[in-house]
Length: 72
Image 1 (cartoon, rainbow, N blue to C red):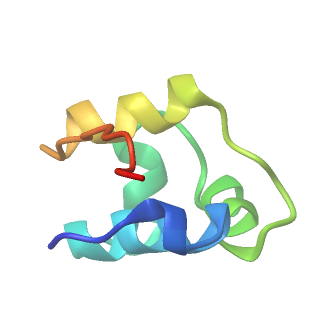
Image 2 (cartoon, rainbow, N blue to C red):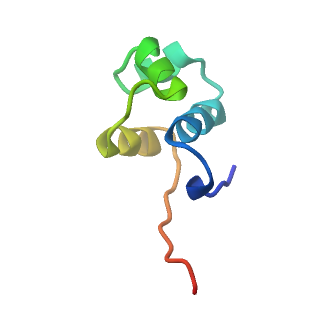
Image 3 (tube, rainbow, N blue to C red):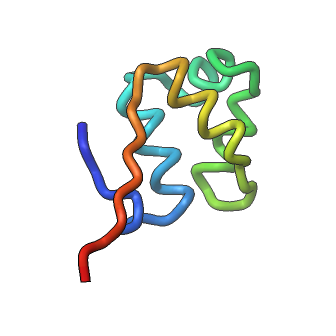
């Protein structure tokens, strides 16, 4: 799976990450030490996640993050 995060909202990025694992919210939350309700809040956009949480997900589930400067 590859997508450009700039094209999506924070909540959509979280949902893409979770769906890419094939886990339901509860399982995904447990995998990183959070509740399913917390993940649901992230995916609905009523809670914001930290960079620390984002990186925990990336490392735990084998994602790679690439930061690239746009060419003018």
